[in-house]
Length: 302
Image 1: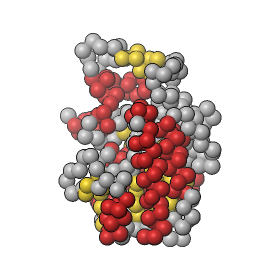
Image 2: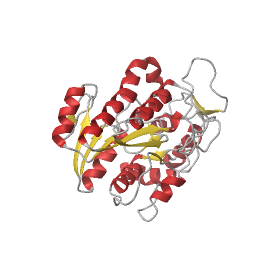
Image 3: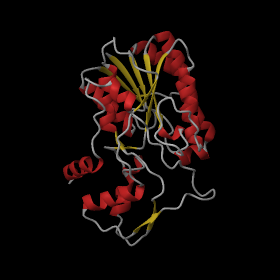
């Protein structure tokens, strides 16, 4: 199988790229700002260059991980976020129509407003911030190209191996816990998140893309771990795993007020039963418990 992974230098993209390569598939990893190793540099906004690379490689699958994933950055550069999160996937869907590859568009639980979880693939999106709006627009764009074989995969907040802890909203909490300088941190204890490991997602994608042709994959899928945590609760886990005090981290159970922070939904729990049913007999969802993974990973790091 021939696979292109966009955003292959990111936390999710690098895990996906490695998983497909390790599974023996012919895999092309694309990156823009952080091109390292054998990744190929490509500006996804350059449609002619994209069409050339894709046409020459002739992929069977394209896993589109590239995105503006930071809600605060999206608010500051809405046009840039719309181009990357909606216009690029729309072009890739049209490209899949002519090149006959299957497009996997990575989306987010933030397409929902967080008021009535759990959300099924059929639940109506109602994003509360610009990031969620651009990802919803990307979903609509890829699914409305009727001749394209496109799939939307919604994911929650991600964690896993990363070049820098600041690369994910979960990993960065390690730095907060580890800062024993006396600085205090107010930490969100209002919104519930379902942190999900990128290595698990990558393994799931390899299994999904190699399902027998007789298995019909629905146009929208949800993948998520099932453990609910606030960011404050994640900090408590990191403090326990690292053996560090956490008195400098103050829980903030109040909903965000004013314009100081980008609005976040309270609980966007993704309902995954359809995905579980689809993968029955093919490894299931296969997600790893949060604290178990971090104990193993951080012990290896030391």
